[in-house]
Length: 337
Image (tube, rainbow, N blue to C red; front, side, top):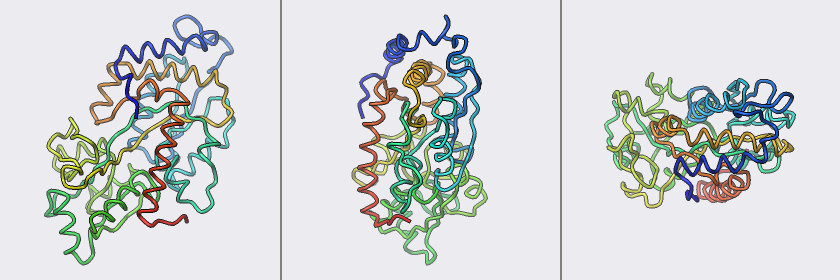
């Protein structure tokens, strides 16, 4: 991915470039002019349960851009069907900028590819506004399991007749395909336990009802730090600064094994370009805010670059993600259902 504009100054300059197209719709100081968009509350629909990476990121950016837009932003969780229920609600919404989607791989890429009769086409029914960040995925297990790395997990799962249960955000979700690829690469006897969103896996994991979960790093950092879970590997190029003691999948012998979850903002197709421009300028300013950058860094997320805050940039990124997902689905032998 192009990360040529990563500094705070670069993002602020990028935000300034967006302003001329939208300045007529705003009063001095960044507040909306009378009668201009937005003139009532905005909804961010998160198609997964509260507590997951999408939810946390949505609330972070909503809190930062709401004052700039001059309207409250309500984050609404509508989980179910691997994100399809909440996503479809946005697809069917009026394209006026007041109902927006917090999209992620499960709802935008993997889910539709694994549906025999998808109810929407994310590439034509939605327009990308911006990426909000990307975070690596990890495998974490209960501390009672006698495993401390991925090789030990694989060996233990093969010795255990019932296998090792691993929860994910749902069939076709952001975490499902990496789990299938890990199983295919290692021969591990892992039993997939799908949930309704990443946040829904955590209570069962803490209660001991599932042996482990494959999930985004920020969701389980606290569990690692207080000893309620043991992260066995992070699927990134390099170790996370938030958990430097955890080796990457690549370090543990799985060459090229990378898995990250993006979070992005999407609007119904047909949303006016002027509205998209106002949103993108607000998001660029938020992405350059030191507090936002610190918060993203605190859970190991990469902030968006300037290119990732444009519709063409996100569209190009998604084309690459779809191509990778198709390849992963073929390798895993999954069939649309």
